[in-house]
Image (cartoon, rainbow, N blue to C red; front, side):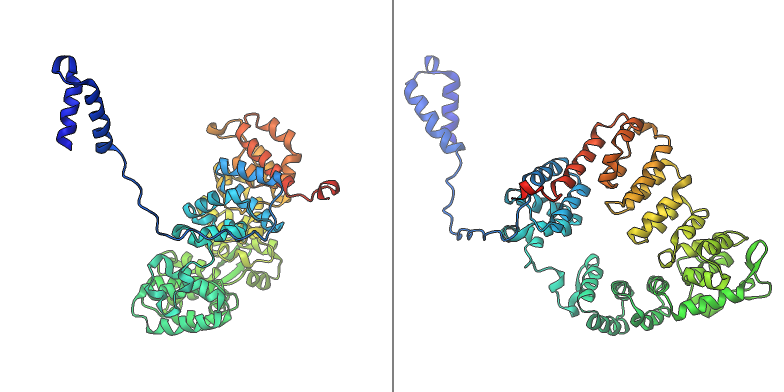
Amino acid sequence: MKAEWSKTVQDLLIGTTRGGGDPTALLSDCAALGVAAFGATLPQEATAEPLPLAPPESAALPRPAARAVLEAIMSLDDEVLLTEWCALAKANGVVAEHRMLPALLALGTARPGLRAAVVEVLGTRGRWLANTRPGWSWASGTAPLVDEVPLEEILDLPSAQRVRALRRKRKADPVQVGAFIAREFVESRRSADRQVLISALETGLGPQDERLLEAALDDKAAAVHDEALRLLRNLGRTRLAARAAHRLRHGLRLTADGLDVRPDELWTGQADEAELRDLMRDGSEKGVAGRIRAAAASVPPSYWTATLKADDAKAAGILRRGPWAGALLRGVADQLAAAKDPRPWAVAAAETLTGMEQLEMLAALPAEVAEQAVVAVSKGWHYDLLDHACAQLPAPWSPETTRALLHRYAALPDPRWRSGRPPAVLLARGDADLLGASWEALTRRWPENSLELEILRLRIRLRESFAPAPPQEAQ
């Protein structure tokens, strides 16, 4: 057939006037051979069973205003706003409209970080739809995920999945999984497996785990030892905390200039084996300053308030004086979440930490405590550091935090690349009601605001769309 088609093309190019032949026959050959050479094949007859009908949706659908807001959010591709919409929808007991389900499933498939929010608004039909494609199985409720892997086989999973799988198992059954971890830790020969087992203890960490973590301090692998030490420092009242308190009492003394090393005591000589066991092996706790930092990182801030007979503010003031203030406050920064009032400790620690260390300190705090700490610490920050810290705070912020950070941003000079434009993170994560009430001040301070204020307008519409309906509309 290829030869016939080639000859027909040649005849068409030459033409019947010069080459002879019947024009009607040549065109007929061209039509027949062209379809045969380039036409698509007929589709094969489908043998698969058609999909069953979608079940009826038992949950309520959002009001038209909320549906319109979701469409606008999807067109903007804003993850923070989508998460906020899903949270409000869940709180109001509604699910996404049917025609939005494919887009939400596709988005959750492409961005695993959104799955926890998206799955809450899929409803019965969304879960049915998720069963129609293997790639959407994460939302079906019946996917063979790592949670269904037997406990004894979890250590055979890819390295990226083992810790997550163990933590989920431990959250569901802490007693059985705790016993499994303790047994496997003793029997595991690979240090990577032992590190996974110790890391899994972070979920549901409690006094029952201290014995295993203490044993892990004797592990020859530095990564296993350091992970166990990190968790022990977060555990509160432990034997490690008692040993650290003993070293602090015998190694430091209070002088007129603050806390200083006692002469002829443990920190004037080399660390013994017992102290080395309580130090990180990654090289961050070497020398006298590193040893003092390690001890301070192993006791809660309440140790200082009790020892110095002062509240958090006064105790932090004492620690920020003296030659070892940097080492002490770097250690305290690791214990900030355990403080009764973290703000004075955060302010004091920020004076000794680099910008990146300050961000790491804030990232380890619970959301409410982190908001207070950012407001307290950020008075002397430049724009970029403030912007990075605010980006770590979960949305939406409280009205008090929003008001404080709005004033903080307004007082700072805009970076050249954002001159006249409002901070995007403020408008995307701050309290929408307070920002809406501050609309005039926002537009006066940042006149170049079309895109950012559009986000704020959308957030205000989002809040209004889920607000209780007026009586006449409710009827």
